[in-house]
Length: 134
Image 1 (cartoon, rainbow, N blue to C red):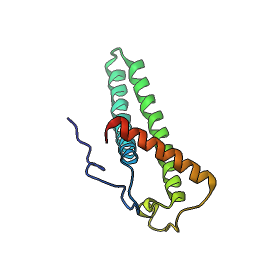
Image 2 (image 1 turned 60 degrees about the vertical axis):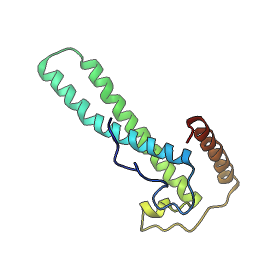
Image 3 (image 1 turned 30 degrees about the horizontal axis):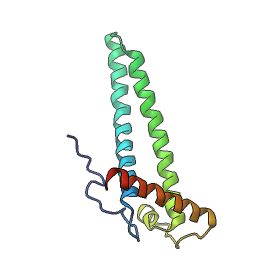
Image 4 (image 1 turned 180 degrees about the vertical axis):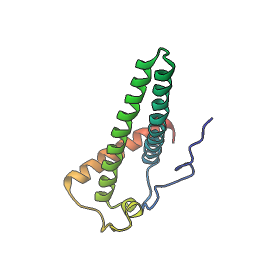
């Protein structure tokens, strides 16, 4: 079994100033693992394409599809990661300061939209925790 080294033993998000839901941690770890997966698959599928091309064997369509999927997945995951970082910054969790030390967080941004999103987020985390028995 392959063990991922990043965030493996982390009980909370690095730099977080408050307790983090286990559901949140599960999502964060899953996203990071998928980022690693997609970034490893990109060069591997590129090499596969090159090997198929030089060997003139069938399977080029599948190799190209895998390569395109890996590229698209990496774009989506990077955009999701950026959006989650900005959302975390607005919530004032302390994670932003750990990622971007030059830009210190000043605390939670209080707005009705942010409070509503946070309530929905907590419900999602509770649901994940109950379904996965975390």
